Amino acid sequence: MDTIASLFSFITTPVSWVIVQFHKVYGALFGADTGWAWGLSIVSLVILIRICLIPLFVKQIKATRAMQTLQPEMKKIQERYKNDKQRQSEEMMKLYKETGTNPLSSCLPILAQSPFFFALYHVLNGIANGDTIGVINESLLQSAQKAHIFGAPLAAKFTDSAAEVAALDASLANVRIVTAIMIVLMSASQFFTQRQLMTKNVDTTVKTPFMQQQKMLMYVFPVMFAVFGINFPVGVLVYWLTTNVWTMGQQMYVIRNNPTPGSKAQGAYLERLYKQVTHHGKTRSRGQKAIVKAIVAKGRDRNDYERKFINGLNKAGFAAQPDGTVAKGEAQTATLTEDGDVTTATARRQQPKRQTKAQRQSGATKPAGEPTSLTKSDEPEDAKPAGAPKPKTGSGGRSRAQSGQRKGGPQRPKSPSKK
Image (cartoon, rainbow, N blue to C red):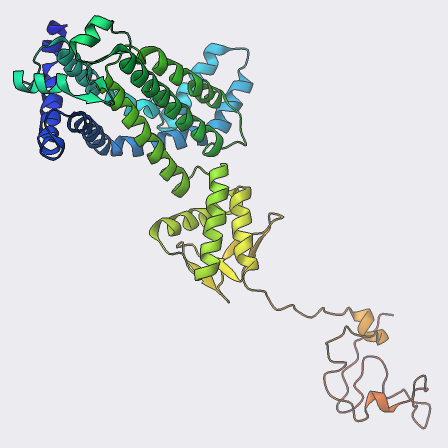
């Protein structure tokens, strides 16, 4: 074990140095030999590591979104080459290469944490065995061995014997109870984090093996934590429990504020955004503007949640703009109605229906709202009795109100008739 630790001293030494620096701060507050000082030092180490891994976490989100976007194409490839697994794999790799996606990108945060976990495990194992490691000298080693977290020594494990636990000045019952509770919490937090991802932040409109894989991991990871957790020192359990809680909170924030398109989380987010926009009359943050801008740019490719959001804004008298803002009133902006037709936020003036030549010649009644003639008649229409015969000229001439002619003023030239 010492040989392995010496080979990886390039990572164990920095980790032990960070723990010692945090211990100096918390030791001044709670006492150098207390479990609070050493336990909070490990928690602070986790927080520092996770802050440094935020860029990788963002990359993981983008990779997961890209994989979810490719799910329809992946499904087509699987159906097309369902009898040829080799060709199916080749087409999948070709699709990944063309789109620049990598299925392993979603594992980057876990892989990046592995060296720190390995280093912390060897530091705590060295404390349990009474060996100095990294920058932890003899005085720090004795202080760490005296530290207890709820009655369990920092370096104790669930599988330790009564003699080993007694050497650390603790009872076997306390160690078993504390480690068992921490293992259960660690596994439960991992399960809840994965379940939250699958039930709220996944596009449920498509079913692919990628989703089946995520569902399998939802049950596999908690079991793995429970199996391996019994061999972890209490300090390592504190590390993993803290990092799982951080991941859960970080994921809840992302799901609430930047959900996956087509997921249930997006529907809930757009409902909240609709209430805020209709109440304040505008998008209030840069993130909201980015979401609205992306929805407007999709056009006919919007999903049901996005279409419902746009139509709700239109009914409330608002219009989403291409720059992500929301305008009220006569704003001209293209939107997508429920039946899939593109329309504008402002209503267009309806043009009068043009009559045919036969209707004009037969004197048919014109639609309501249109003038009955180009100029007003010398005699009002309502002054004539209903059903009265049309007046005729004295010598059997044509009627003044003959079809196609004006009742007063210059006569319209008659179109030549076909003979």
